[in-house]
Image 1 (cartoon, rainbow, N blue to C red):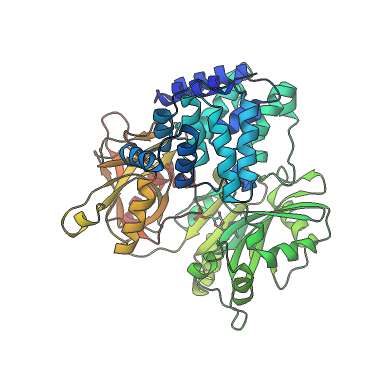
Image 2: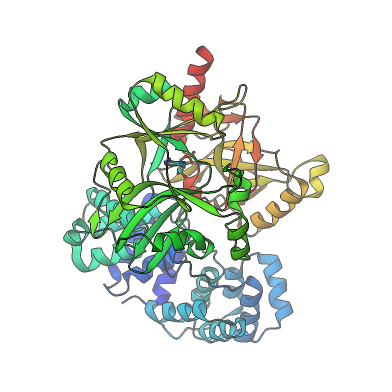
Length: 572
Ligand code: AMP
């Protein structure tokens, strides 16, 4: 059994290192100490949560409330606490400063239960009361991490990949990493994976199965530059319309329906019309995927993405679902009545999907054609573009559904514009600059952005972005970034440039650019003395992509591919 104080001490050690190798060693030590019943809780808390994010359990406790609770727990005036917070900029540091006492030696499970009650409590008053009681039982270093977890700002710099590595170490060999990864891809719940591993060992992992209600990590597409490349890579294949909406994974389990967004946030309550349509499908257990889009019922045309995305909201859902009803263009079947379909060939999954669902009204089938020549691909592509779609998808007929990975089983071919990169790039904000001239007043003038490198689980810089936002957007952006600012570079960021303010890599923005150039200033794709790659004339399109997690940003490899494609196009 691990005491919460021990956990806090492990957190301190994690905070003190920027080496991933060391982090996985520390985590390995921590996980080895935990017993079977609590290891999932240890994993969740290390990730700064109580349950996986797809369960949608939020604390609903602001920094302001935490300060009130701190003031009551330590007897200092609220104004003094607020002043300290202004100086230190972090509720964790404030707690460490003001709570000078020994704790009661609570275990991880005890603190977890208390935290759980706080998250589940309905009213603010109840939450604060529970928090005051908890704080009174904690030592200052324990409280430092507890309050950070509560405000959603643990900042240990530990990514999923590091936890997976540590769990593989627990199995005794690094090579077991793939098995841990497989289980994670099938349930998106590292706590559950850790518990299975602790209770049932290797065999438990080998027998790990999909369970409706646990999202499968989504398969992603590589990009191709032309119809010829699509055929060259896939041979005879399926091409489908690429709808510009948002991707959903939908689970049916008896009468229950669970809907997850692309970054595996729960969306069931935001999509009543889709939920209802799924309930009617004649299957006990089912997992399908599709793209949801608002369609004008009068004209049959798609509404722009800006309208579709407004559904990701908490209020007036019902009114919205009447005004802009969504259609779900179904494109894959992953699970049916106890049977795992992800291992079956795409074409078989598709056939079953067609048989299973009565399409029309809310549920539609994605448009598909089997093709074998570049000419046929070109025709399908031209037709899609003429109808206002953003491009097409190509799918290998015999490929399984590769959960959690991006590869050439699926490819996308998008329309392009001259003098501009064919595609926008999703980048993560890792810092910002104060700005000059008119911007100096705003206190923010440009962002330092990065792409993701899955092999090292780090973010590598690719561009400074200083245009594309309105003044209001800059102001809200600064506010959002100041909440996650750091006094040092984040452990998972690799950068040669030092911005005025570092922030936790959290927010993704979409940028368009003229081209990709080689640059010695940026670390994306940089090897040894060779320069890295950078975006030329980048400008933001839209605001922060709250539907994407930092790991969903484009990858270094994709930037390299875009660079190759661009070279090829300029030669053609
Ligand atoms: P991208 O977001 O540019 O990487 O493109 C891949 C995304 O296209 C998927 O994650 C889906 O959200 C979306 N999409 C639209 N239509 C389809 C389709 N027919 N098959 C698969 N994905 C699709």
